[in-house]
Length: 190
Image (cartoon, rainbow, N blue to C red; front, side, top):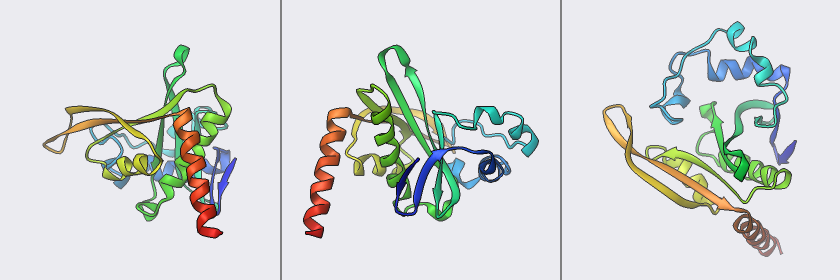
């Protein structure tokens, strides 16, 4: 578990499942899906369908819950692009729109990146988004990430083509970013 004031990321537990299902799968077209890879199909599921695969969610290293004031609002995750070379991609979903545009995603990803670098021999972490998700691109910029790739007009959504965007940060860049951030905070407080 990692904590930043009232925000916690931790492994998913049984008590989280009902809330995660409500946020992610109860509706056929949830609002969050318009921003999270909307060019991929989303299917609603009954709670029983979701619950029957709970072993894929509970206490997994690769997917954790994000909580604000004890309330589940989303998840952070990772998957292996190529495990033999330690190429890991991460993701975040803030499914509760009450927590959009307030810095929650940045705070959660900061904790998640720390966790990933602290617990695995990674050289780099990154994520893929699309040019229509300006908030996700901004999160990467706020966390010191580099725009590593822009694949032009390869995502089609709602009658328009968008770019696929890859953001990433190397371990040494992250360590420098955290050091500089810490120095800025101490100067403001001192």
